[in-house]
Length: 481
Ligand code: SF4
Image (cartoon, rainbow, N blue to C red; front, side, top):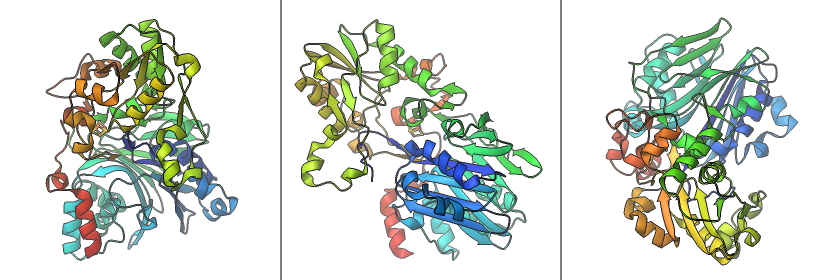
């Protein structure tokens, strides 16, 4: 696997779908390539050619699975859905790789989702008791079984029946023999966008997947909306009771690509505004502003502009760290962060540095980066973080360590500064973050976004998680299946 930074939260999945395009498989591969940052462990595409469904799934990056013409040619069809995965629930084995596909009495159905069902374990237990045989440990399979046992007649009604039973955060794409379907959960926690390319409708997690193929942005799928795209056009259904939107605010901080528009807002501009808020809230005497690349760059630009300080690339990122170091030797693993980053002593020596990063999760990488900047001769290091302290785990489709591993859950800011080894440390306030994304402040009674990893204010019930450790429950179920 590409080395992942365990000091970041990781978005779990990207989804893509296209209806009625001659190059549906190639466009889906391109879309997944643009969404690669949302999941690097596995990728899959299912197509439909008017008679048959075709699928290809593999562990690893999109380019490793879909760059061969032979693979794309085999994926015949006018419609396709695809998925990038970074496991949330369920281990990374091929049978867990989406899209999942099942043949029903009414025809075939392929399904892929981004997010996490917070009652998947409970539903799974009930389904197993009814005799359902699970092939995978992926919570997406819960949808398949709920659809299979539904007593409704049409596939759309069966899907709606399933959706009414699941809780959590998800954006879902599904494909039948006559439709492409997109769904956003009632709170709209995870993104889903509608676009169009050469007359074909497209669904994607982020707009950057539209840009890569010259597609046009149409609109965000609304929270709680089900869009059914078929030869008659696009039908919009609202099967859920209205609920206040709770889009994931972390998409603006780190998950989404900076060139994406999410919920109508430029991610890059939002990150610059977070940096400016940070400067206003925690200005410090310094000589220059240095980002931790790449994710700290836009916030550092915003900070530098607001503080009137020079912006310098004091840390250089090696973009070619990748699969060369799969399962590295202990000696190489020990190099850790140095494989990916190097301090640029020419700009750091003797300087008072404001070091800007987007978030701190465990604090492990931050500590190493600070050591590196200090060793390169920085006179002072003032760390500024473009998110509030991450003190709670996410249960909505993001890979988060358990709470006890989150630095902010166990230490106050002064202790964190000491642990990381900086001269000062400050995080943007929750109200500063809300200001940067267009609100006056956080409304504590009715928060406008999901911000649970900062506040612990979860927007849904957490049935499975209240019942205990989900990965342990899954492995017990895995043994039982
Ligand atoms: Fe996003 Fe945090 Fe909410 Fe998870 S808990 S959906 S990362 S804001």
